[in-house]
Image (tube, rainbow, N blue to C red; front, side, top):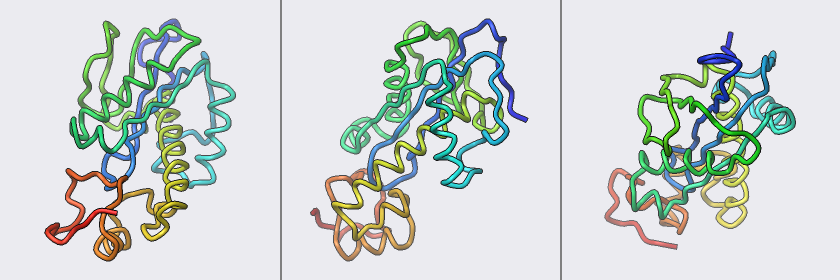
Length: 202
């Protein structure tokens, strides 16, 4: 059973989570979500535990019912410049930047590390997306927004099947890199193949 609050209903708590850290291509995407007091959902859970159909359904519900939400992107070139950990933190910062309706008082972070955002209190929670509703909601938005973006990229580069693998290092994705090289959307600092000496750009 997911918890509604870390402190109390009186505290404006923001759930934060990201998607795409382990991908070979595309952005890392984070979401910030503020749920209404005493929010309830029978199917809300960590996005990794849900089908794509349920994630899409929940995204509509969350966007309709949340007091405030926002999504932040950090692009592959930025990831290569600042590394994926810092890029994940930056994506979360950008999502908080996007909140317009409410004034956050506490940030609930999925994971064990975070770079402080302004003067706001934050709490890192390992597997928080399976423990707190607001973090689970953020995981849904981050995942669905990123998957949607990667499906659009797949139209430009269908060989890599990003509409199915979302840029993750599947066997088929790596085989496509061997055959066709790397694109402008690939993260050049990642180990795209076990032996990268033969890679070329597209």
